[in-house]
Each structure stands twice: as structure tokens, then as C-alpha cells.
Image (cartoon, rainbow, N blue to C red):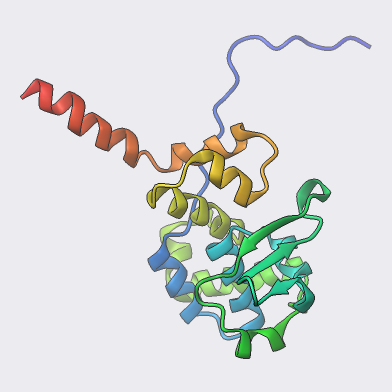
Length: 184
């Protein structure tokens, strides 16, 4: 069996859609189910994948240290993350585990995106866009790619570097301070 050789350059992956903080809050308002809201909270505020949200159990939460454990994330790796800022243990703990399938979660997200008007603005938006939003939010707040890599559970820094394309603010700011000042 012969393999064809690739010729030319690889096509660049399109930049995926991400959810902004304002859009995230709009999605929460448009979501009636607390289980769905809780999953969205962990996806946007902690960068969890949909499968990691669904697997989360009360015993994974460490209230004393304000952290939680993602057990057997992608690649069967565990990681410890800070609890979401909006997590209220007295209220939210009763809704764990999030009793929902991936498909039901995606459907709830799509309905919320339609109801909030986000789907019209960003047609390719999906539940995973919350995770992308987390990465961009972290970059916006000065975290390094290496720090974000650890929190998101990426094995390869190349995966995390993809998010830098979604957030060109640092490059634009550097251009404004270095190049634009020299040219004026």
C-alpha cells in the first residue's frame, strides 16, 4: 500500500468561536435548567470540557481549599483547579453530579444560544466555545500560555498557543507602543 505524499503547506485551522464574559452571562440568563447552568459555569469559569463537566461529583470538590479535581480528563489525566467564582457550595453541591448526557447538554446550550441571540451573531458557537472563552479570558488577564496549558490539561503547548490567535490584543498593544510611537 502506497501513501500519497503531501505537497504544499498545511491549511491553517480556522479560529474557533469563543464566548465572551458578556455572552456567557447572557447564556446563563437564557438557560432554565440549573444542571445546564452549572455545567456552563464550570466550562466558562474553569475551562472544562463537556465530558469533564458531566463526570464531576460532589466528592471531587474540596471546599476547604476552594478547589476541585478533574478525574481522568482527556488522556486519562487528573488535574486540580480552583472552584468557579460564582460557585455557591450551599446551593450548587446538591446538583452534582450533573445528570445529563453530552447530547442533552449541547441541545440545552444551543437553545440558550438561540434564546439569547448569540447563535444569530455567532452561528458556529457550541458548548466547547465556553472552554475557548475561558482560555481567551485568561490571556486577557495576563496569564501565560504555560499557566493556561496546565489549567486546561493540554499535553502539548501547541494546542494552547492556538488560543493566542484568538486573542491578538497583546500583539496589537505591542505594535501600538513600539511601532506606532516610532512612526509618529
